[in-house]
Length: 383
Image (cartoon, rainbow, N blue to C red; front, side, top):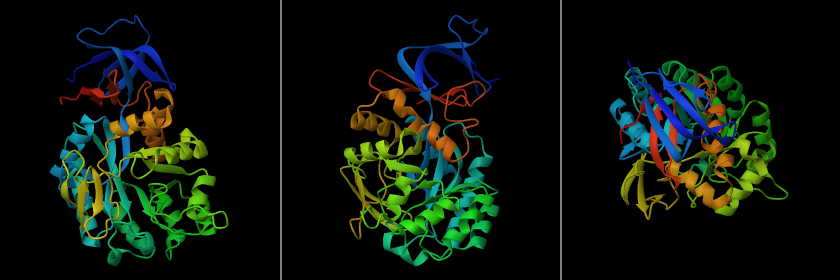
C-alpha cells in the first residue's frame, strides 16, 4: 500500500494561496480544513514558510540530460521524466521533431513501451508532433527534405499506431492541404497548433476557424506583425488561441513576454521549455533530431547556420524568470505552467490544479521560489 501524506502549508487553491491541509492518498488529492483529523499512519509534511502549487506541465520539449526524443528508447524517456520531475514538471508531452516516417513510428513505439511500464516519475501524457506539415521558409531546425504537404492518411496512421496518444501537433497553415487536415486532427483527438509559418492573416484565421487551438513558440519561427500585413502573428494575437512562450530571456525579450501576457491575458498563455538534450548539462555539442547543435552560455544554436534550436530551460527556471520579467505575484503566474497547459491538451479533469479527486501532483517551493519537494501521484520524489 502506498504511503499517505498530509501536507500543511500555503496551498494554491482557486488562484490564491490559502493555509490548508492536503491529504495525498492512493495517488489523489483531498483538500482538508485546518484542524481536520489526521488519518492514522499518515506521514505529516510541514511546509510552513513554503508554498504548495500544482505540478508543472510541459507540452513542448525535445529532451534533456543527454537524451533527444527523436532517438530516445523507452528507458531514455524515463531518464527525461526523472530529470523533469526534479525540476517540478510532473507531466509532459514528448515532442517529436520532423523525421522520416520510419523514425517517427519508432518514436511512437518507444512511447508506448515506456507507457506500458510503471511510471514513478514525471508522467508522459502523450506525443507532440512538431511537423512534418510545416513551411520550409520557417523551418528552423526542421530538416527541409522531410517536410510534407498536409496528409490526413499519414496523420491517421500515426494516431492509430500511437493508440490515440498523439495529443498535440504543430502545422503551418499555408502548406498545401494543411487547413483541410485540421478537422481530421480534431476528429482524431489531436489539438492543433500553428507555427513554423509565414502564413497570411487570412489563411491563419481560416485555420483557426477550422479548429486550431494554439500557436507554437509564439513570435519565434513565424511571420511577424506588420500594420498592413498582420500575418500569422496578428491572427494568433487577435484570436482566442493559446500562445506558447519560451521564457528563457533569449527567445523572447522580457518586454515581449509582458506584451504577450497583456495582449492575450494570463488565461491564454502557456509556458513551455522547448528544451533539447542539453538541458541539465554543460555547454558543448549536442543533437536535435538530425541536426548538430552547439550550446554556448546555455544558448542552443544549429551548428550549420547559427539559428536558435530549442533551449536548455526548465520550468522551475521559467517560473522564476516570469516573476522577474513581469513583477506579477506568484498566484497570477502559476496557471501559465499548470492550469493552462492542462486545459490546452484536455487533461484538466485530473491535472493542473489542486482540488478534490485530482492527481496528487504537487510542487513545494522554498522561500526563494526553488523546488524543495515534489509529489507525483501521491509519491514523494526522492531526488
